[in-house]
Image (cartoon, rainbow, N blue to C red; front, side):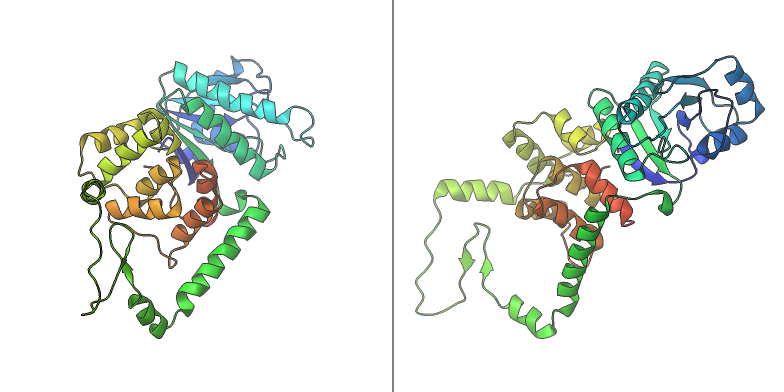
Length: 338
């Protein structure tokens, strides 16, 4: 997927470019900066000595030295002073200038730390939001895979209210799922079922009149949709929403190459996170999301935290896939996308 939040040591990332949250001297320091300098070896410090200082919000590039990358991009984030001194704009510039440098040097994969969220004091949830928003804006017009690297669970947080709301939503649905008795399951299984047209299927009875036949046009349309594959349904929905392919796969956080495979193979079977990502991109309501998942051989269940979190965001009308991924990451679930 174009943007991935991962928990890792950034010095271990095997990418084209690793971004260093540097200080203005570029001579190394504490935190991520010190870790990158130590892992890269003395050659990095020697190269940085010839670059001079780097202003806040700007970026400079060096070789990767002993790291598993071609380049190290050094950017200087803002020190948090309450948010009233242009910190957000400066932090956005860090991401944009770093990405522009990566593009200039032909990088296809880039790993960022959470810039300014350590010793510089930028609130972590807000720092993550700036990172995601800045990177997603860049990726609207560029093809690149970008990793936001979180060192440990303690280094990550989403908004406290959102976390509590989702946690409560999960607890309620888990309770509903596990409190359901065998008798209630049996009763539910005996309830009138619906046919493919959404009408209730009556139980057999000798004195019951036959149900009216649907109109021919409705039948034809229903049969076509019944036989649709996931790929065919996806392409139909994109057309119905008036979206371009690129708008859809970018909004779904899906790589262009994967989308090309889906488009060219009518029988393509996506993973569950990929199928849901497209439903989110298309802003489908819950019933249509379930229908799209069924085409791929999946279903939503209240026995799964992942599924309940997806349901929470759809029911609340929030189709921002990056915010959904932040919540999924906070609850240690798989992320949406390829």
